[in-house]
Length: 397
Image (cartoon, rainbow, N blue to C red; front, top):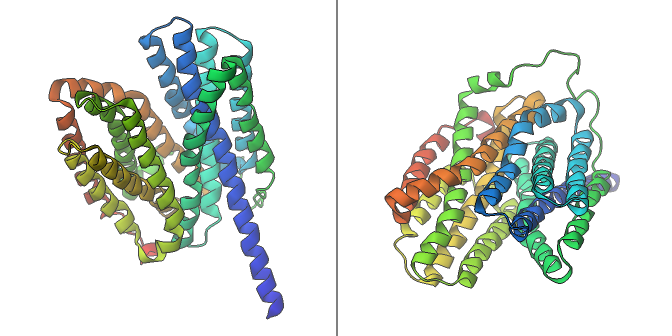
């Protein structure tokens, strides 16, 4: 009995180490991309270019991972974890080298594409491996809750440190410092065990078309929900500054509202593993979409800055809960040998939305008014909650 207890403790310790390694790997890739998203637009403007060039630059961060998502997913399915993640870290490191050594818009555009591609390419392999560590739906949500901390952590410290380095030392030093992040990813990837060869599909077998995944109605519903989550964040991040400007709210308050959102998202992802057994996937998907819709209904109505911060915190909690639930559900409803491909399609749709929807939102906001845009998003989220009610599987019972 004592030996079995020791073996169980060792297994739990090893699994926790592996999860921390996956978390660190994604933080490295995502922080590199987030830091680049802060530094490169400022660099473009400092070189005398205008808003159009900045817009094109930002789109490269989303379009590149969207184009590479399917190859990244298939590579993860066929080669496991380490090769895709090291290629992703290599792309992120190459982005740093280009902007450190080269001046000009072309170098910045290429670096943006490589940094975005590195983050997206690695994220698919990391999420696929995280899903395979779980033995049931409850454990899967727990693991994805920890992994989902990575973007929030990266977004919290990466841009801030980069901004300070730019102000104190200039762009070249700030870019060079970013090299630490993909190098750390390569180091931490060594702590993730390699998959056994029988888990990875035969590479000589003819690949199924990714279109065959669309024959799964549950997968289509999940993609719709995933799109709504990506769009709702896009609406919030674009419309909040405009709404605040109309109300003469200071930039520091707007920044604090976004910080409250990020912190609440981090906190709920820490808490989820301890409460997941009391929450079904239906509640975490459908219920949080309704909560998001309520926030979007109220946001244009409230005028108090404290109320806006409270609503931002609620939105952070809701969106913070829904991502681990979506990733867990995706692993339930798709074939095990095609998890990487399914994650790739999810990533592609999300990145395409992030690259294209802000332009549409800006046009709609100018025609309808920002308040109406919030309410339109609330209607879409309410409709999405109905899709979540049909995502029930045997594993949920």
